[in-house]
Image (tube, rainbow, N blue to C red; front, side, top):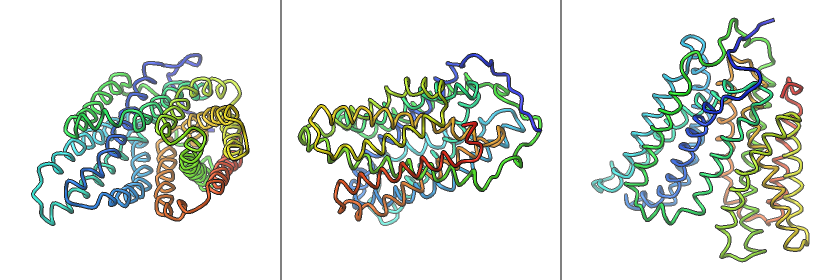
Length: 401
């Protein structure tokens, strides 16, 4: 039997380390919010069709499918040999920060030539690739902040950071646009570097486990990667179908004028619910919480199309937000439970890679989905979540999730 030793206290969570990881998660989300908001406008400034943004995003997500597992696995090797992953994390953050701040400069001060028109999209793709280099190695550090049973509670800070900052795209886009691309991209780049410094200060070398022997041969890798990937695909498609459903339900119930505010409120609710969701998962088990979350979220999507009163729709949306929070909050603990301690970076990279691939395929089919009736969209979203539920329940070592 192979064992892994850890210097983590068994009874407590290292909250400063958790906050440092949440900071890097928030910085990642903020840069993507800024990028999504400005990128079509920068393309237009380059004399390119802003609709090209979706095609570039598809390419970026497909690249993510390969880069995330590659560098997640590579970070495992550095962790084993050097006691830390910061060579990859620092390289990725510094590269991404430099490329990010260069994007508005290229768009605003370019010479209108055919070469520059190709160079800007290439730089955008390079930036997205750099972001994929360090995400898994950075977020996998959460496994070094708490006992496995308490990881859902620690993960709640990452879920909060991700969803709350992500809601900015609905509630603060006007303020971000008024700042202008130069200032906004600079702020995003600086936040990345500050988050890196905070992360580095709280996670010194050898601050987590040290593996005494390899455990990579002790699990059925094919079934494990399949379970992780199918769970990621189900959550990715469920999230996209959820957004399309909300874009129908909110205007129908409360009017077009509240659509953006309603979407912001929903994702802020997901952020806030991460704390009770994490506490419940820690007490009852993360696997049960994720399966319950997927099943009840699927049912809630269907309930939204029943002839309910306004308060009934509102209550269903609250339940839906809580259920999705339980699902998103459980992802990292789910992966940590399935893979050996010395391969967690690879496992998390496979999750994010499959998630990105799912998003790419969805975007390729977006035109067809847009022509489908709203109830069918909600039904397909429910089906995607049920797929995730089955993948979790049938995963190897499910009893340890």
